[in-house]
Length: 194
Length: 80
Image 1 (cartoon, each protein chain N blue to C red):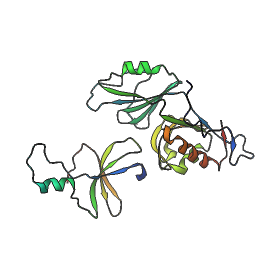
Image 2: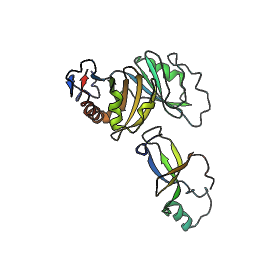
Image 3: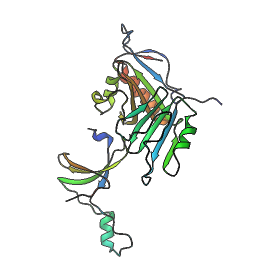
Image 4: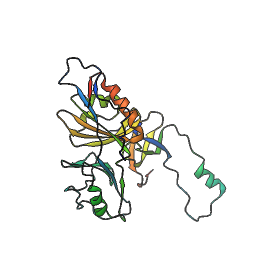
């Protein structure tokens, strides 16, 4: 059985908005699919140390905004003792279930319950500023936040600075609404849908 | 600094549940469940960072000016 991506009904390729004479400066908007997404939460009454736990060569860090990452995997701080693991290695889930004991951690596979939009381009931050109250001037490369965009709860993960490359995660059921909000805000700058 | 949009109001932070197994009057139970002061001025409130890290916090806020004076973690005691 083939799977249908969260934005399959709304995402279409092409150029949209104010695109004239902006060939190099257009925003690129794409849907990211087939990632492993796992939420890891340490129980309140658990006292074991998580710093030494190794997942794909990475260690958890309980620090606001922090993203520990390598080429395939990123671990986003989602709240105190709460992380979001994103990876292109789908089989990493077995490793995660093995190293995080169920007596101390709640591990939930959210791979099919999120819609992911990636925006790349100089104006990507301006698009986010239009609908989100967070001060994006303070968001560095490899930082992540949870906030709202036009009232839709979402997670922002900044992959790169120059040009800005940002991944947005939202609940799958909010995906189409967020996609419409983001693309509408991008029309002013012109965007290429990949 | 996070916007108020990300937070959700969770009620009066000074209300304490009566001790477990303690004999209490209907009036005391009524006060715990229903009766609230509607203060104008400084007030300790519970707020949840619902669109962020989802943590509950205590906030001392002026209900007239929306000025925030102090915040505490949910498990920290308010010293009045």
